[in-house]
Image 1: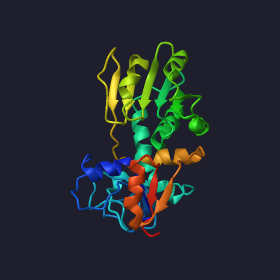
Image 2: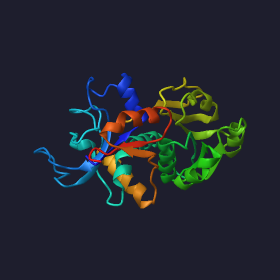
Image 3: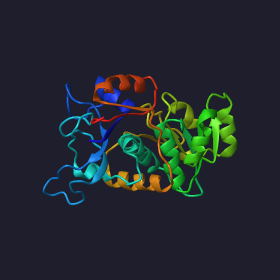
Length: 274
């Protein structure tokens, strides 16, 4: 193990809101980056010494906040050489979530996508993955995050604190957005009115509204996928994009870091050998 991410999902595991196949006491952590020490007899994609990253659930033995981690080979991805270790440790869950949100969108130049809550790590990556499909992407975030969100590929941003932002957004898609992605807690129900008839609304916050007007509503829960993770990580690096890591800690500081994350403190990373 070289780095393991600390995210809001780890708090869900801790309090029992996400069953990852192992009951406490256990090490937390469902995403990681490190160097392969050994492989099973049927593994052909990886060999000892390979640099990899992974999101794993259900867990095989224990969580990733440890010196060693056991993962299914199908969940593992090769780490791009130019991807920093601490970023690689915090990337798998939000990047896979973004991939799986965008997979339900039509994409292409004829689609305009709205991403609500784009300032967060996952929201920003949804912008990046949606823009990669060729769609025109508009997003909500704070003015302070606007430059970074546009760097991910958004053509325009709206200040979510402005009560008129929905009216401003409607001017960009008078018939409604073909696809809307929600990454802000408690906001999904308020977005369905912005979706075009027969369009798509995907939320990652566990609060999907009831469908109306033929809108396809999806409650996205991240699933491991080593092949998709590998391709998306390579694409992200090739585009010169990354994610912000708020801080790092050793194993002894992981609990305190998780408290900060749960209060909205951004992504942290455990460095097991640090």
